[in-house]
Image (cartoon, rainbow, N blue to C red; front, side, top):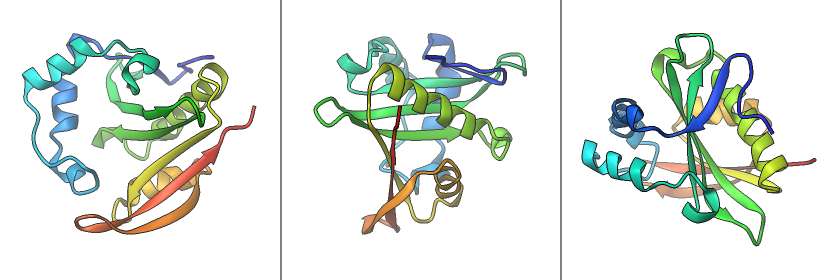
Length: 171
């Protein structure tokens, strides 16, 4: 199990990530494609970083920072596994890439790394993503990474439908 390659590294949140997390979580353009509906304060996010154990089994979720291996270790974005279901061996996956790194291939590399981690280390058999039908970059990245469009849920979000993607992880 590797959480890095020659281009990126996926790592646990650190207190020094607070400024980046603040920007990511308060990106109002991203809110229209998600369940987020209010800004988060630095204190909210600091408390989250502090309280997160980084253990998906304890927290039920895992947020990892995507860090460039080449670019002075700049933060590229974050990737999440959420709603871990041990009984059914599945979890949701979400990804956010900072504007300047979009369409660079680093998002796909991050998905590949987290898939390997989920399969080889967590022994999950399925990952799924719930994507707003208006979120064209997210639709594209999950399609590119061979997630299957399993369903469309009408009016899931206030302003759009949701596309449910799934991917069977085969060892």
